[in-house]
Image (cartoon, rainbow, N blue to C red):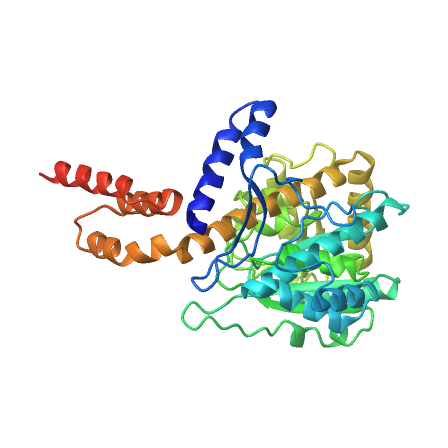
Length: 430
């Protein structure tokens, strides 16, 4: 039986089992056990680890750690072991190499990254179990977004220096937009933070957006986990800041701050929903000098606008604060409000609930990304896509119908269903 045929059987059993009671689902799953996949769907290597009815257990658990490990990459992989030990020892080089590993698209490195992340997540779980702050409370993730020119990089440096002076370890994950033509990115955020970049208690990691929507990178969640594993207790995530749609960061952090400049133009900006209704704090930057009167006006407008926007949490009323990253005015007060937010959310267990939701969203986001990768590399899709693209561009077939055919090819790997679809389409044309 071919590898692809085995996979097709697995998919059918899992589909059947999904809709039935647990007892019947178990009987179906007993027929086929998938222990692991090699993580590589290229044409050179498609290996499915398959075992028959006698196979046990259904899930591979090593050393009672509740970690699902890839069959190709072992727990004692030298690269994984070296990076894991280095991250636990708070070595900046190991952290940088670990983030590079999780950003890689190479199949083997992606598999190594998943094992590394599993080990770090387990380490964080054990560390939080003995923490005075309780589960998830030993770190604070803060997302920052705003229009270009709002002064996000200057603000991060001012806030970062204030935090390191108080004994915190700060990690900054800065996202730069990537070129749609060349795919390149300037990655210049670190040069805009000269003081923070040389601070021994701070770590700055610029990353390209690589076409990912939402203002963040595809691997921002993974980078956050590695930074926390390396002992950074405050994680600042800066988005590309291109507009109101860049809100994906709100699903990755504990607190979302919207940074706006004074005299930003349209006074109705404060009434627009989207990014504003996700903000836990609205921060008016550049509140100094000649811009001070304009900053006060903007603050008043946003305070009025927030009254008409539904709150994200019944336990917190979003605030509008004025600060100056240049003179550092308002920075200490802003941090106190952030800490107040964290304490309130911890007290009502909403902080923990948000962290759990972040893990769920991360899981489904990874599924969407990986399904698209697997789909585009699938041999059946590769064999048919050129012909279907020609039919679509010739206006013989609708894009939606062509998509249905490719999905059928991907899911069933057969010719009969696709042939039937083509015949049906031909009859409709006649």
